[in-house]
Image: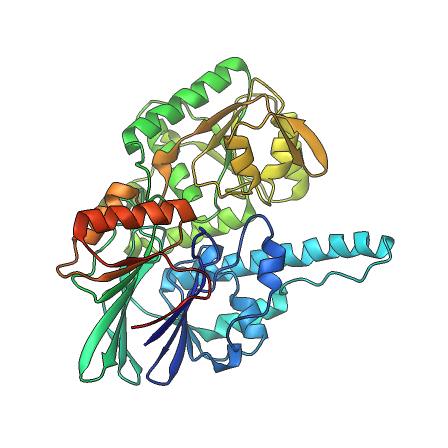
Amino acid sequence: MILKFLGGVRTVTGSCFYIECNKLKILIESGIYQGEGADEVNRAAFDFQPEEINHIFITHAHLDHSGMLPRIVKEGFKGKIITTSATRDLLELMLYDSAHIQESDSEWLTRKAVRAGKPPIFPLYTIDDVKDVIPLFDVKPYDKIFNLGNGIKYRFLDAGHILGSGILELWFQDGEKEKKIVFSGDIGKKGNPIVRDPSTPPEADFVVMESTYGNRLHKPLKESIDELVDAIKITFKKGGNVFIPSFAVGRTQDLLYILNNLVRDGRLYRIDVYLDSPLAEEATKVYLAHPECFDDEARKFFSTENTDKSVKLHFVQSVQESMELNRIKSGIIVIAGSGMCEGGRIRHHLKHNLWRPECSVIFVGFQGKGTLGRRIVDKAKFVHILGEEIAIKSSIYTINGFSAHADQAELIEWLSGFKDSPEIFIVHGEEDVGISFGEHIKDRFGFITHIPEKGEVFEL
């Protein structure tokens, strides 16, 4: 087997791994790159010929693992996209939303370019390109082994990260022996709301493993919930609003679940929560349509839901409705995308409220280098948003206990579930994190570890 690392190496975005084995060419993930310089990276020529790829596996629906699918299909891929049922349903929403953003941004940039006498800017892909992706999905359940052909078998296990997220096991023939490579996808932390805890494969010869939080520990969820309650109460007492940049898929649903529990338990009153993301609204509906992915607590919660003891949830549809939220000066929570503040409606809310000392911004997810969210978290005095310089006067909270990613201790615990001594390839983490996590693994287990460079090839 040839394993080539095309993305998601020494960074937390753009995951893409190429396998050539027994005359089959396979991609694991096809993530879009996010952050500084993203457009140039995403428009660069592929390191493979899309029409030669036989299969693509997607571990979960976040765009940093899946967002290049329309471009790959547009440039010739005609094989199957293999994933779980819930991931397919979420991806249909997310890819259409991504294409809409691509088209809108290119239209705006083209008008600007034409005025400057420059050529038009074309979108990375369009809504029509997404339509060509949907028929190629081949959905599979958890825990069942399937034959891919040419001596290759595969299985998805529950990764416990977001709805439908999977750990991928691939068995392949190496001479007369069968060997196994495991792709972790993004590993969830134990006790995540709604979804089940992550599974651990019993054995592997090779593991391609994420390391997003490989150098730190999360606060316990209880402490994070306490901090969330305090932040909301302090902000409302000051006469301001709470703004939460949140990923439309996963984090938003977890937050709504937690806020409803807080109201049900009497720790918060029936506060007004505005979900300012049509995508998040549709994703929430997908969550409710897949109870087979719920843990026991969530299944019980949704079967006994009492609207008199839940938040007053408002779905914000139009841009005009979103703009009107900024006329409400106090007493509301606004959850809006994107999670790293790189796009979506959250940027407009920050522009109108980040300078208000009575307001608060609560970050509940990872903020990648070069993103607007990271600059705010890193205590910048001013940031540029939508062409304006905005002073940061609001209270800024970073509550990492809500992360859907396993922390260092949980990643190590996941690795300890392997009964043998697999060779480890550390991916999907910032460079310094991957290096330190690799050393930690070697010290703890004695495993052979690699921190691949982009384009690096290994023969397994």
